[in-house]
Image (cartoon, rainbow over all chains, first blue to last red; front, top):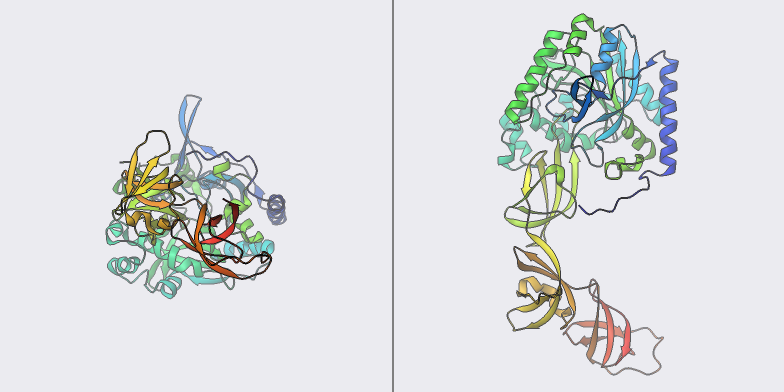
Length: 322
Length: 191
């Protein structure tokens, strides 16, 4: 409205210096392990179908092509490099998500993403722990199943409780009319955010794994204790979600099915459908090597390093000042 | 009437919730990386002054409340209403009832300027400035030479407010008072 522009950075000089040290640490970590740094477009031709990610459209006009999207993650481009035979790769890049602003979010943020051909989710979790604990000097994480975490802190069973039971549990936060259309996963997201997350990684960091198959995104799915679970993991440190990793789905047919299911869901929610990235699917058809990959929020990692509770404390210019 | 979606939520925004005008105090954006986003919002109900905590799904919206703050001069009371006038030269007058005036009644001095919060064009609350200057109309006799000594006594001001003042204060003096705490600040000058 009538806010005065502020020219000064939001982060302290010490925080800015610590950011530079963190970047040097990350580059040293991967150099030592023979993982190659790559750069892929921040400005891509396609966005993502993911129902809960709103990309920021760009209005590019070049080579007879109109449009484009600021990337929400370098995932598809990096997987195209993997399919082309890159071997293990990592990238530090700026990514963009519309509407996300809060103490832990800025619409533009720094992402560290890396892929390890031949690794499964467990092996990559070990490497994530090496990196995070090496930098933060924290205890190594324990591993907790999503189901156990939700049962412990939200007192419902994410696999066994009926949608009705989940909704009733959510009435602590939402009015009955708001609950309509939230769906099973929406209820679980709410419980995860408000009942579970604040308790995660308090004593020591914790990996959450074994997500419901409906929340697999780009992870492969298998049976565990009779339930269909995703080979997906997240790391929480002091209640802060730090990364999201997969034992990657390599099946192009299944991948296309998930994209189409996303768009179907978008239609139901009145959100715009997103064009499917055919270059990415072609790369999968060519053959993505068996690999695990993970994306880690570098701004949040720096928050943990400095004990900051607001992402603005570690950003030179958060969006209001950008 | 305009409405605000969760993306526009921020401190100070005035919205309608359950039919009551509210002001957003805090807005917390919460989102699991791959999941649905929510806004956890703290609001103060401007009718009751009660603080509410509510959760919204990202993309939900609230109607804007027609609430504005205006500087107005206090004119007089007829016993039922306290009458205020805009200071913009329009001479427009607004009657505020006892509920709107609330505790501010004890700081109301004719010709002084107050913040009147209007909801749908009618006074909702009246807020005094942080400091007011009022005359002492009644207090025990002062003690000469007692200026440095501690101790206090009650004094009744021209508006009826009673504040604790140092012992040396006498009837007829004008005092500066902090309306937020109801405490004596200083003497303005003897009149």
